[in-house]
Image (cartoon, rainbow, N blue to C red):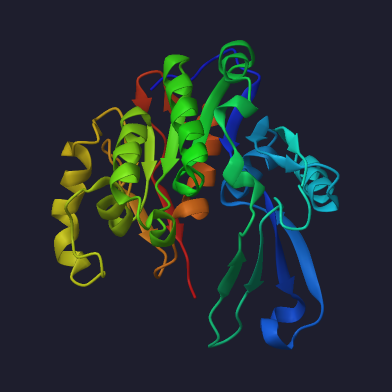
Amino acid sequence: MKIKKDAKIDIMSVTSMGVRLTPQNSQPVHVSNIYEMHATSAESNVLNISSSLGLNAKVLTKFVMDSPIAEFIKSELRKRNITYEGVEVKPDGPWGVRHQFNIADSGFGVRGPIVYNDRAGEVGRTISPEDFEIDRIFKEDGCRLIHISGLIAAMSESTLETILTVAKAAKENGTLMSFDLNYRASFWQGREQELRAAFKEIASKADIIIGNEEEYQFALGIEGPPADGKGITDGIESFKGQTKTSSTSIDDDKITITENKLENGREFVIKLDGVKLGDITTVGLQADIAKKLGLSEDGFTGAVVEICYNK
């Protein structure tokens, strides 16, 4: 893998920005009347570490015009040193578009965390390739690493078209691409064949592919251990080999992250007690790549990464 030397943007992502409401003091949702509001999205969360380390991070998104929530989101992104680019659209009345939100119970003791999503009318579902000057972004500005999430890809037909267009532009202009599969069954319902083909196309262009054993099977159709997690220890060895020889064109030049392996000759030790890889495992790797730490011109030469999570 090679990193672009002349680029204004170190790391970038396409995302649908929204807000998260969290009860104070770890209270459950149904008994709390005081909440904290955070600007958030799966993709922008990944950029937080890189931007905090001084890298030029950017999101491509869409905003609701004259919305105080949109202004809040923009302000929070500026605080995180994340620049943004995106058109503004009229809300079209009370039943029109808005920024998605969710209410998050962070859990306490034996009460596990849970997120309640409300995405009806989400403006991010209308993101389309025409919203951005993609040629200018990749050819004139330049980007070292684009992070793509399966969430935004599966959100709607127009967001999928956007991601496919961005992936193509990244490949043509020498931008490295990481792809977190982020499979969600509710997003895929009734579109399995369409999304499986599209995800394979995106994966064929990606330099870094991230997912657990269920996501590789459901999103890319790679045969592996049972998706229910039973017997995963016995089946994981053969599954590792499948991630390198599948029809997604994953080859020795790609870094493929699973729950147990960082391919290309590097062990990736994960002790997460079932916590999804996603944001936790990608931010450090992406910052490392974008800053050229531990990455030579001919491949990944960084130190072995070990992430430990203890309940």
